[in-house]
Image (tube, helix red, strand yellow):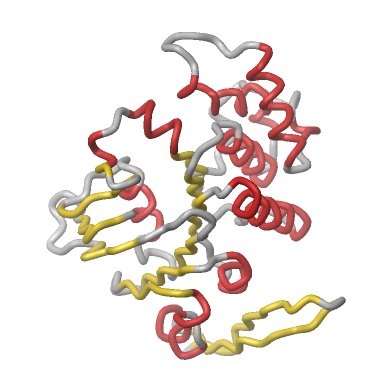
Length: 261
């Protein structure tokens, strides 16, 4: 999906991302991990065309994303940003979710009954139907995050991109989101790209991983091959212990931080 991408902020002496290559196949989720400031959100935004590559390109089915109209991109790729600010809107949760249908509607058209029903189904699908009539400005950060995920899903995209989707969510809602992503990958063939601060989540859901360290160096490949204890220690500056637990017949991978190195 990204072919030799390099990105530099205007006036910066050096690129923050350099020679990035990312491939994402159908039903093949990709996790992006790294410490704060490594460039994870910058990578997502540049992949989506919200920022321009200095060199290289983002490709969708072999076509440069820059050659597509914003509406075409919006129909094919849905983005759940990292924002937790729900105070900027007077919309209800249902209104916000219906906005996800905008790329599919004629220009200046208003959402109708079909869009309303699709939005209700999207909220119910992630267990957030109680947020439908709640004003977004009264929601917690975690509640608003669930609404943004539903807004992305109602667009029926080919690719779902999420920037730290579990941040701000309690254990219950984290599991809802992760289980939902697994279902979307398995049943819809959706391609999923997600930034995460949780190595165990990457090991549990992603087939491929891209690690960015504090020097913006990228390491990518199959998740189980790339994410070993030594590599995670180098990237995060933390000694970790990776282990497997058996629970009710299911194998679970754990990643425990041990000490700063």
